[in-house]
Length: 241
Ligand code: IPE
Ligand code: IPE
Ligand code: MG
Image (cartoon, rainbow, N blue to C red):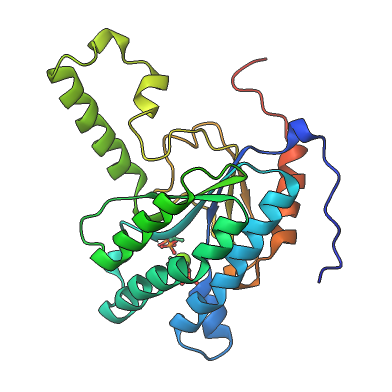
């Protein structure tokens, strides 16, 4: 299916955890004279091709930004579409994910999320809980700041119950209270926008940022591999000289 072969990269230089901001669906649709929803629909194939490409190249964890805590500001029609669409995608793709050994996890707040979306996500989590090939964090009604606040509140409750002493609160400990505890190695955003948009704020403290000028529905596994090549050529210093 592809003309672009998987690049040969030293396994030590493959990012363990990749975060993807799946952006540009609306612009993709607009360029074709289609409604914005058609762009979201076309984005489904992109995500699952990226999942397959991630497995092939050896990525262990992929966090996909599907709906942000800010996306409620969109028109009621688009919000409604995105709720139903996210639910249907998870339902439709569940068996395929399970067969591929993907562990599905949901990151985000329940809050305004449709009950049918959370129940589909929870069903996926249960079915795939023991899978080891790749962890796919589906970030739905996710915001980095709200995740940090929720973690802080849970930690405060544990301190109050004397489950943990304040002096034992390290960065590592705090991260365990987050929906997604692991650091992001590669932060990839499609569509040409160069911003974080409240995605994985804590986890991306030392992530390598890669912004590619391709709209999400046009993204394929080759796009991920290209980003990984860019990542592999970077010098990650973590403050060292
Ligand atoms: C990303 O595409 C999908 C979601 C945010 C749900 P957009 O819908 O943001 O597409 P653009 O940025 O308007 O092109
Ligand atoms: C980020 O994209 C959220 C998702 C991809 C789900 P947005 O399109 O919502 O972000 P902004 O508004 O351009 O920052
Ligand atoms: Mg956008």
